[in-house]
Length: 156
Image (cartoon, rainbow, N blue to C red; front, top):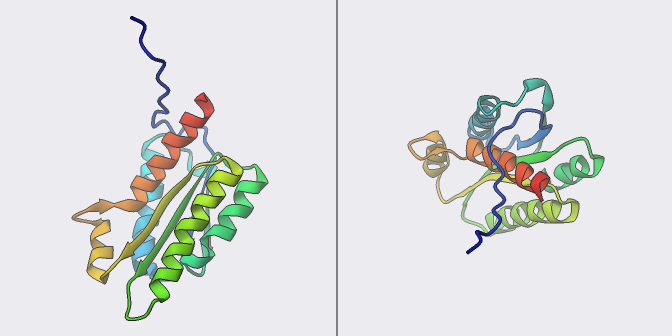
């Protein structure tokens, strides 16, 4: 019996041009996500000179910056970083939903991976735990996911 063909991307970031778009809102947490993302990319072989960091006001603005970067053809992968903490109003739902929907739309419309590192938490403590605390660093995870997907797409 023949084995199926398996396509697996790998985690080698060397030679990849990657842009990270990071929100300034909830900057204390997002800066930790950003540090984790950059560290993970460099540890996986990326050259810091091949990384671009773009700061935007908040998670709502992530998709438009990602879209501009993806359309420019100068990057192999994108990473979106932000932090939206639930409050007492429905504002959380709109911002978190648009960030997620917009990031997905950019990936699909441009055929470029977007690592989604936007925290959507109920409390500040949950955000801190996911930005380098006891639950790891979701910025690093999003960056490594973007690398793996860039390699998968190159194989396809």
